[in-house]
Image 1 (cartoon, helix red, strand yellow):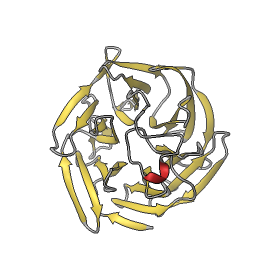
Image 2 (cartoon, helix red, strand yellow):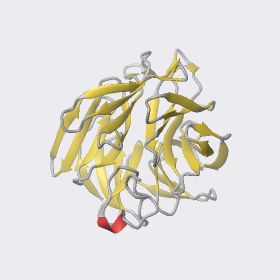
Image 3 (tube, one colour):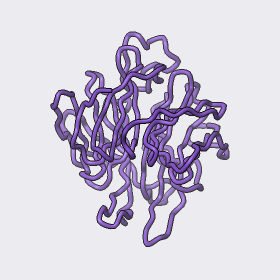
Image 4 (cartoon, one colour):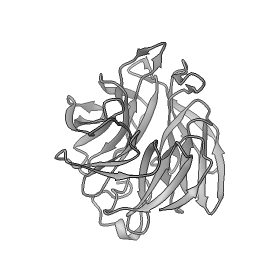
Length: 298
């Protein structure tokens, strides 16, 4: 394990950039930070609110799921509605793309993933305000800028990812530590949720990434680590010394380097992974991944 950065303000959403730097969002600080390692990093944008997840889009920009913010003194959701934002990594310019789905305000967008067509799937976790817990949604931002809800229901939807063949959207549910999958019937249209697995013990799920073989690697809270779930529901656990392991992304020459955000200690780490990650559309690629089932942009 190698520590790439320390002192981060609740890091999430690692994105491996084409130059092999890593971008993270800092939920507590409301910033987007680029990290080169060896102590070098810089804030490239300050969207405010609660930047919670990020991905590279078809235009090379960063797309950020912003939950609207958290009242850290009380540990409750801020009342501001959330949004999807575009961040220019070169200039730091921020553009609000979407704050409604089907005419309803987004509440707390959490994590996001692009499909091959350039559409953006994302979770809207909902908020907890004055003890009331809102239901979650899985939404889809079309390339033309319209946004729809593919599914509404469930509680505390967090991490999201696509199966290698794009037949399924996977969603991690925080409070129950359950993984669900939804059949993709059309862009922005999902079938009913199907249960895949539940993590054993007293734990919580956060964000996720998918491997080239189709395994789902989920950041795991309280017990601290990564829970790897097979499409058949089998689970394995990789412990990491942090109670808030929030997210994971893959990169490196063979896509076998896992970049993992640790929110309790404020670190970004890199560690070897036993299998290659699935290259993301429009994201980091290397010559060794050109034959993968997931090419960059197609």
